[in-house]
Amino acid sequence: MIAIFLATVLGMEAFAWAMHRWVMHGPLWGWHRSHHEPRDGLLEKNDLFALVFALPAIVLIAIGLHAWIWALPVGLGVTAYGMIYFFFHDGLVHRRFPTVVSGKSGFWKRRIQAHRLHHAVHTKEGCVSFGFLWVRSARALKAELAQKRMSSSSGV
Image (tube, rainbow, N blue to C red; front, side):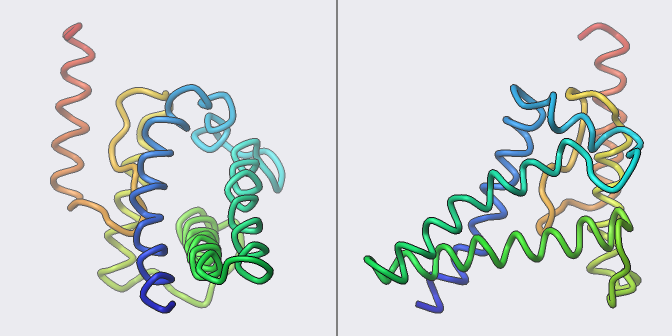
């Protein structure tokens, strides 16, 4: 059960990367765009994704408690990833609320820098770094961003 929980938490990073890259920066850009623009108020349209992603976790936990025990660690793993994402992405990276983590460790500095490079682009195309826990070095992301900017300015 613990192995399933941990595998789910780690697997959620791949799922979140794919959703961010292909859905949020694709057909649901209308919701996600608010996250790439200055926020006016406490909430943004992008926050609706938290509700959408919470629903399967709630269903899996309910199924795990009442019908099929193996669904429980999956639902809890999805929930744990969502909590990690919320506290560290919204709190630490975007400073929407105070956190107890300073963000000064190499681990968090790398993630914060990667996410800021993602936000260097305000359109759905041309962004880098769609993950959160697994990120490439800032040097690699800056090179990719520069290459994308050169390609788009030359019409390629």
